[in-house]
Length: 110
Ligand SMILES: [Zn+2]
Image (cartoon, rainbow, N blue to C red; front, side, top):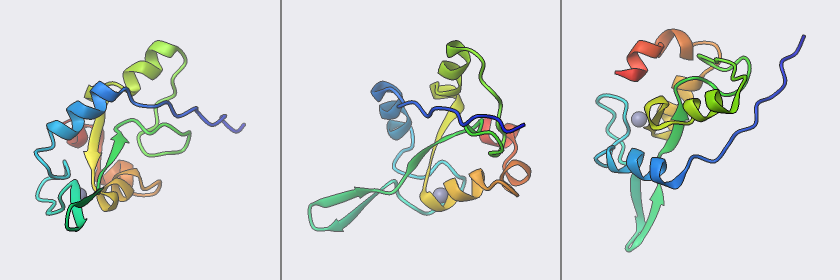
């Protein structure tokens, strides 16, 4: 049986703001050198980070935990269960083959 794809919800603006503010301008991965914002040319800035779910949203994704109620979905999208990562670390953390082993829940919550 194939699990149905889960709907991805927008993260509320205050939670997004908190994630960006607490990043201190850096990807959450320890020792990652990448800033969350790049100045691409004088005065023009581009985001260089993505909000990542600790519990993968889609069936088969790393650390996926199915949500059966709106409350469970809300918890999955809560500040505590989200991190801010540069695109390279987001890809590594969410990798379907190695993400769950290389980045277990305990490490991500830390
Ligand atoms: Zn990074």
